[in-house]
Image 1 (tube, one colour):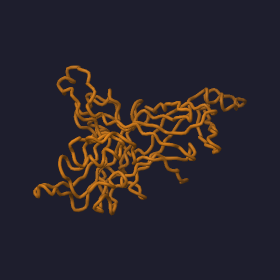
Image 2 (tube, helix red, strand yellow):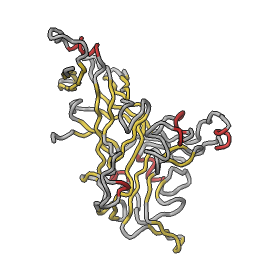
Image 3 (cartoon, rainbow, N blue to C red):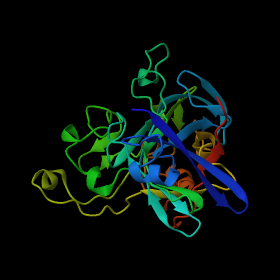
Length: 326
């Protein structure tokens, strides 16, 4: 069957925002040329690109990024993955329009998507291309042409009911071993919502312990203080809410960007701008979401999450940027 592209024009504070929506023609005849009719026949497909950056440079395996953090550390990428769910468009009236994820996409199911920016397997230099590389969310959304879209909204992390399950039986991209290999803690703790890991050149030292060292500085966002034990989960007990769920709802204003010309950007350089990547003062290397981990004092607030006595605030690492023509 032929495929049509419906151009939905949305007026917003004088600016014209356009979204090109590919539609399956279905049973359309040649006389069925009304856009509203077409939108009623099939939900428009939506693609939301994501960009992983280190300052002005895109994330890539094998590349050295210089001068990061408070000590100007040089690093290479070890891992760069994250989970996202509950994606929505938001109108200028505050109405949320959900994006239904395309469960046929290999990096998604109907509830959650994995974004994987490693261009080679294991981020190893000289390795084959990573078959799980994914830098976009795909789905569908029904957007009334008369409304104005002002924001994009999503939640960073894995939905609570999927986070504490038998990972070996989970639906991809949550299966471990599988696409979630290296992105899971354990059945009780669930998944790492982010695996943003680097190898600092020269390694990591701990001033309080001269015998301690680590080759990798990690940013593992995930739920902590989860009271239900693994044995209870195995017995069928429903998990209780974790003390620190650490799921962050991110809302990004569209501004003057067109709906068919933006990308969601994550800036690693901004994430670690207040951190010393060549040093670790306690706990696991880097930040693994622990409220007592000194490195998390700088990292969790960057995601807009609470740490210690500091309340949750606004995140500062995700933004919307114009998607350049390629």
